Amino acid sequence: MLDVTTLMLVLAFTTALSVSGLFVAAILNRQVMAIRYWTLGLAVFVVGLVLQVASPPVPLWVSAVVISQAYFVLWWGTHVYRGGSEYWGFAKVMLAIMLVQGLLFYLLRDSFRFSTMLHSAIVVAICALSVHELRLLKGFERSLFWLWTALWTVHGLVYLRRIFVYLFDNAYMDAASLQAAAEVEALNYMEGIAFVYSFTLLCIVLTTRSLQDVLRRQAAVDPLTGLFNRRAFEESAIRMINAGQRHGRPVSLLLMDLDHFKSINDHHGHKVGDGVLVKFAQHLIDHARAADLICRFGGEEFVVLLPDTPQSQALHLAERIRTEWQQVAIQSKGGQFEVTVSIGLAEATLKEHENLYDLADRADQALYAAKQQGRNRTLTWEAGPHQARADSLA
Image 1 (cartoon, rainbow, N blue to C red):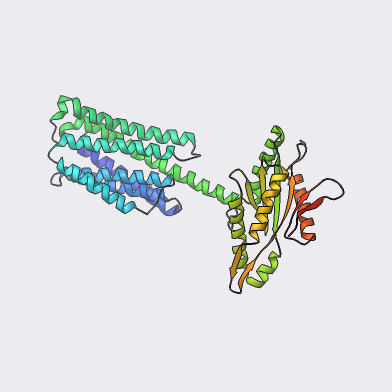
Image 2: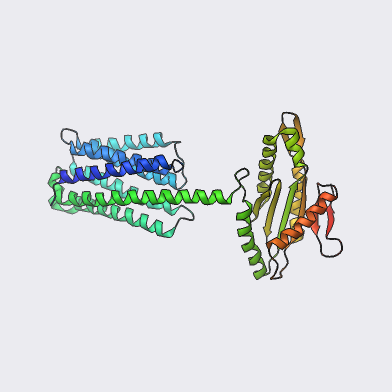
């Protein structure tokens, strides 16, 4: 069996290498806040191991506090990765935890057995919390989740075994040092080396996955308004229309154009114009349902696809959007002004050959007619000699 002190040093060296790699990864991937906490947690772990090697004269309970605190920092990193708070509260929470567990370890400083059991219980609890954090993350890849779960479960089981050994095995009840319980502790340190390597690799994989999610969102979202861009909208809308045709459910489309938008940029500046676009995007979000697809179609044009919505209901929504929007005051250096919107509406048919572009073309014809008839109105597309009719005039 390897000497416990030697295993401590090997684990400390292994962890230090992992900290170096994660530190570089954290610098290169500043968008992913979680990796900073994972790096910090392993760095605290190295400090705890060094203090453990230096015992005595350093009291063993001090290293137990530091190593236990490292696990809490690792858990916080997973909490942040899941979407929890970042800097806010971190220092206060960690300080409170350190004071509580520091007091407990100090009170148990003369009992190696119970101090070791307390540390093991903390590790088991952190293992469970770390798995639970990623379980709460929606849309997380199942394969990564099970790898993460397997890693923390094995680590937790090793420390759970440690609790039972010190609790029930007469050979270790009277142990007064790590060296006196070398057979049990050696297994923990060897598993710890494998854990640190595996944890570091998974941290890098999770960071890469997070960056890929960011890139996917950037590719699908209009950077100014935060709405779907045209490409992402078309991909989702095609599936939605096809589903409506298969199940015989109505789908309607609203195509909107902000009236005289060029004059807003000319008279008030592009910054105010951008502000109008952002405000109108939020106006659409406030009026739409969770299932509706909202998109900035290009320039000052916006589109909303309404699943399970016949033309009559879509018309009611369009009129609410139009009438309430013209009451929104826009602030600029030149004073306050209002903006109106013209809307073209069309309902998808159940014909299998019809697609999104046919539907958008009909809505565009209705929108064109609305602008020709004076703007600030909603027109629906109708088959026949009059393709658009005035359902509501300003």
